[in-house]
Length: 126
Image 1 (cartoon, rainbow, N blue to C red):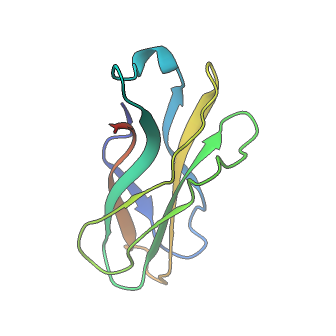
Image 2: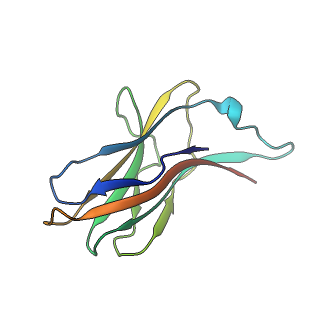
Image 3: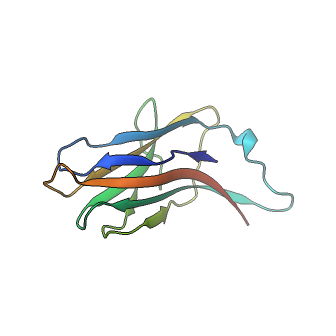
């Protein structure tokens, strides 16, 4: 599992755009498939906003080109309280460096922010 840990992202309009909250090199060797089963790799994010009306987005990009990985543009709920979102199954390339990014917007106030408690790459077996 690759995880960003807790990150704060400014929510004032025009404050920063996309911010890097995680970086990793993909190695499928650490993600063994259970015998007789199959699995999917997903981006999952958990976060909260400091005020109503903020929009928080999370995405996974290829670090060298900043091209977005298909299915990873996620939007957390806009209300206060903790929200979670999950991508569709991902196809990641062995040895490729990926960056997890977040952006928050929707406020005129400098104090506005999103708290991304975690943005993680997970394996789900089924």
